Every structure is written in C-alpha cells, then in structure tokens.
Image (cartoon, rainbow, N blue to C red):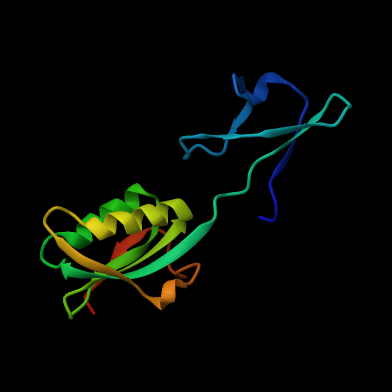
Length: 151
C-alpha cells in the first residue's frame, strides 16, 4: 500500500468511539485496535487516516554453540510462531543452526534477541548474521514458519 489508508467519517457511531477517539478494528484476526487520525474538513465530515503498517524486515542467522540435539529448532519454531514471523530453521552438518525470519521489524528484532539466549537446554556461543545483515525482504516461499531438513 502506498501511503496511509483514508476513510471518510461522518461522525456516526457505527465505527465505535472510546475515550481516545474513533477506532476501527483492522480485521478479525488482530487483537488490537488501530488509532485513526482525524482531520476536520469543515463540512460535517472528517477524513480519518490509519498509520501505515509497521516496517517489515528479514534476518538470516547462524547460531553457534551447543544448539543441536537440545530441542533448539522446535524452540525457534515456537518462538517464531508466537511473534507471527514467517521463515524457517534447520540444522547444519557443521553443528550450527541456521534460521531465516521475516516479519514486522520489532518482531524480528525480538526473535534475534531470544536466539542469543536460546532455550535452557542449549548453550549459545554466538549468533552470526548472514548476508551482511541484508537478507532478502521476502523468502519467496509459503507463509508460516517451517523446520527444514539438515543441510
């Protein structure tokens, strides 16, 4: 979408107002309401704009340490799904775990942070960013998060 979405609002109660002003539910799957910004047009109508979607990003990482045979991939899968991320995770024959995350910037950042700690059964020595931190904006695969075969 280019720019914010714009709605015309005539003050009718069907949008639903609360103490903070008019709000509208983005869709049935979201658990939060988006705040609408009101602009008075002077003719009994107000133009409401919704802020643009949060920025999205991707991250491609390699996790070093005791990260295989300790449930690390299942843990990453669970953590990524909790954050609504797309992507994948897999073991590598060299003993590392490779992962690719795609989604809202704050969710990807939170995922990278928890990967630096790992589950209690693992020992993470370091997390290496692949692609120089310039992972593709979209993995080009089906949405969702997958556990892939070892490479």
